[in-house]
Structures are given as C-alpha cells and as structure tokens.
Amino acid sequence: MNREEILEKSREENKKMDEREKNALTVAGQRATAVGGLVCMAIILLNACLDRYNNPATWAVWGVYLSMTGTTLLM
Image (tube, rainbow, N blue to C red; front, side, top):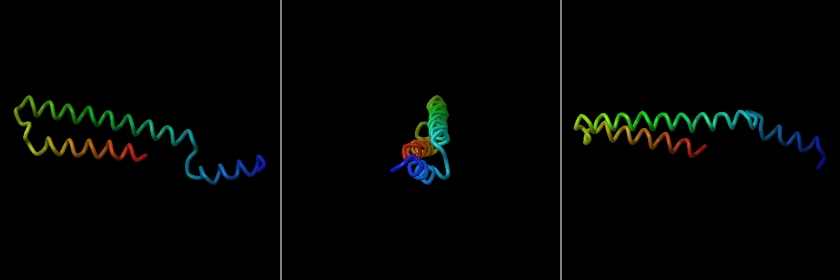
C-alpha cells in the first residue's frame, strides 16, 4: 500500500469531520455535561433547602442529568 492509497482511505473515513473537529466536539460535550450536572445539583440543593426533596421535579432533574451523561458516554 503506497502513500496515496493510505491518504485516500483516510479521506474516506473522515469525510464528514477531521480529527481535530471530532476532538473539539467531544471536549465540548463533556464540558456541557459537567455544567449541566452542576446546574442539576444546584436545583437539587435548592429543593433540599426548601424542604421539597420528595418533589417529583427533583427526580426529573436526575433523569435529565443521567440522560445527558449517558448520551455523552455514547460518543
């Protein structure tokens, strides 16, 4: 296999995005999930301070956070 064949295969594999773009999207997704987790924790702490821990909204927040985390791990 010569150099041109290797380059052609690489171009076919990375038709939509290059390696740098894939890495940037992965890092952005991880940071977005971390920020989302912090926001969810703030909502949960606020509900705990207001004695509303068993509020169904608290469980919904956990559902949203776990969905974000699961989606990030699939990337």
